Structure formats: structure tokens, C-alpha cells
Image 1 (cartoon, rainbow, N blue to C red):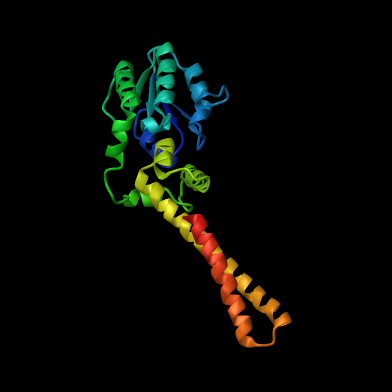
Image 2: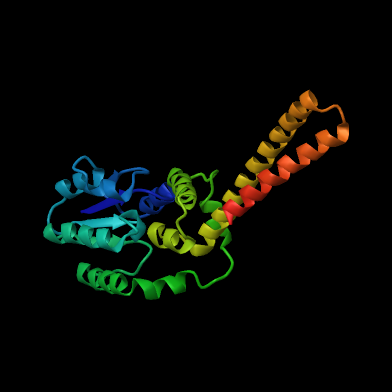
Length: 231
């Protein structure tokens, strides 16, 4: 029996692919995180409990299960325990042992794989559309917000790229967008403080040039401190 499973990024496209494959039963965890697979309440665990020896688990890509090699290996262990077969529609047909060897090699040589993933200096248009705050995919929007928070917490671009399995160019682009937002906030604050300083100067000085001087000095001091801190 062919047991289809869908979860995570590009969820709708996964369902479309599975519709074109002779799937007998379809299970789905929607836009849940990969960690949800190991929850007793997940549809993936329901699939495993429903399955019988010799059944085929059909997924659109390996990312449906996880982007983490260790989690993928754990999934393979569960499939092997139940004597199931894995069919990945976006990849050539392979046995569980062949998948295991590939994932073990990838895990051991993870550092060698990253330069290949980030070799291109220009971000792909597909990544720009996928990883944004206004993406059509719920998981992509969530991932975008997570990257923003990691950048705010002063994580490096390379660390975030490795942790979230996102191309380095994409993380760098999000970092530049964050800097633009921060700069816009700073400019608004400076504008408001400039108005406040003018009103404050009017209370103590009658000369216009003194008021303007105080306003410019306060604004420059604020900008200098903010820019030095951001560097």
C-alpha cells in the first residue's frame, strides 16, 4: 500500500505531487515543524501505526521529513523497524540503506557541502520570493521571522545559514532588510526628538539660531551613538 505524507514548506505543491501518484492513504501534519513528526499525536506517527510490513511511504522531498540529517536518520530507523520502503518523488528510487549511506556521508561532510550551497554570489529569485515576510507559505513566513530574531540576537550570517538550512545569500539579504528597518526607525526617532528639542529650546531661549543649533547638536549626537552601536 502507498501511504502519502505531506508537511511543511510548499505544502500545497506537495499535495499536488501526491495527487499525481497512486497514493492509497494520505496523511498530513500541515505546516507543523519537523519536531512534530516525533510527537505521539502527529499524523506521521499515525501513518506508522497504520502501516503494515512492505508498505511504501511516499513524500515529495526529503525536506518533508526534516532538513536535519540526524532527524532524517531517526525517521529512517522508524521506517526500517516497521519494514517499510521510502519513495521520494523528487529523487531517484533508492532503498533505505542507500538513503542511510547518503545521509551519513552528508552528516560527516556537512562543512564540505555548505560551500557548494553558497557558492553563487547572487541570491536566486526563487529564494527571494519564498523567504519573505509576505510569502504565501506559513512556514516560510515563520522562518523569516526566526531569522530576523537570530540577527537581532547578534548571530552571524554563516551560523544562521547552517542552523536554518537557508542559503547564505538569503540570510544576508534579510540582514540588509533588517538594517533598513532599523535605520528607518532611527530616523523617525531622530525626527521626533528634534521636534522635542526645538520645543524645549523655545522655553529657555528666544534666539532662533540657538534653538536650531541645539536641535542639530542633539540629532547628530543621537545619530552618532546609534551608528557606532550598530557597527
